[in-house]
Length: 127
Image (cartoon, rainbow, N blue to C red; front, side, top):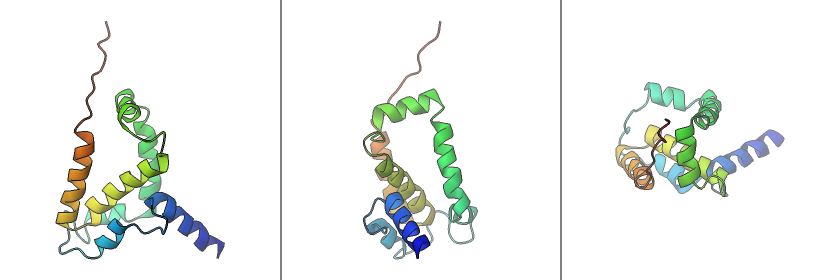
């Protein structure tokens, strides 16, 4: 019973939805095609496993060590005000692009491209 409550709480945190199942997750089941990858693909196999979640967190932490990537996040992200919401957005993109139908994945890519369109940066020139 406690394990179920922990799992439900985790889903709420990761999904950004009070019920733990946001609308975009429910829409995955309504897909009209197999999307960019499809069942049996490496993407479905890898992204559908628990170690990917652990590896994903590690990847985000490693990315934060890169000065350029970190500067972009600090200057253009809401992670300080809403770290879990930011994580939920990343989770949404990965899940929809991996498991959504083509139209849903295209819309999700357009959503993320729209957010990144305004991001600009330069590395300082060391002398």
